[in-house]
Length: 460
Image (cartoon, rainbow, N blue to C red; front, side):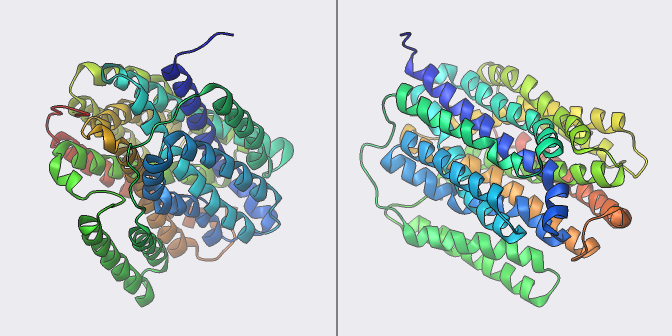
């Protein structure tokens, strides 16, 4: 039997999970109209489908990274895949929209365990000189998952119904668990186990819950009060972490490295701009343009396809050139794509949308790997688990904030009405405002990325 190097086996295991996870997450977006019709879900609850997944991912990302450092990155990664199997099964069997929402929350926790540890596994077993290329391959696999997700989601929904987008993940995850158990030998964790900070985890959970629910209730007084609770909770979390003997994350890491802190900030704004767009464009293509789920899926896959093609090359560029330059060029190209998308109206053609998404995808592919490489290269080796979790936390928090603001827009324009072609004008207003917000986020990311400075050393 051919014995592969552990680096290769780890790359296969992580890349497989990073294809399956995004594929399962993004395929749901195409199935949402069919799911909403079958379960008689209103616009508000439809908006919570992607939001609850992200909320859970953000809540559990730092705890997952800390547990991985303590008990083993491979172990937590594998448990995350197993939890995803359970959540996918229960979503596919749900009889009400509330049942789907509960298990989407659980699925988000599984995603935190997977995405909060995968990059740390790769960083732990890959030589530094090859890290950018490895991260480029991992990023490409994420985008491959996102590329095929809309097409698979549309195809499964048309042939078998919306439940198929959940249960098709189950055999893939089971096969991956078997591969890890049989082929990936060894474990990566810290030499000394630190005490888990339950108080810090609880404070951070309160922050995320208050933030997301508060945004959904604006402009009411209760929404404003919850946002105040969120701000106070975040401040308390940072103070507690700075004083804790075994923090989930050291706030000092942000002071120690300008590259680390500004790279995370850039990631936050880039992902805040992007996540809700596929969700909204799926509604645009199926309700306003009247396209089938399968055809809408083919259009939406263009962005991720461009990302998947560019990401490996961007990884090699990150090994040869300064990450700041490559990533900032990527941000600028994404901004150009959003300038085009901001001209979208009810008569825009599929070709126009495809061209706009190609630009966004090309720029995002050029941005993500150099930015990830800068983050992972700015910390010491014993903190790569926390750095990996922080990197994914910036991504998921950006996604969550962007999606929460879009939920607020949907509530303002659509309220509790069921989605239908009669609401096309209100839906178009929501999409237009969201695209303006996204462009603003990308422009902020361009500025922050250009200011991050030169990466000097890594993994000391």
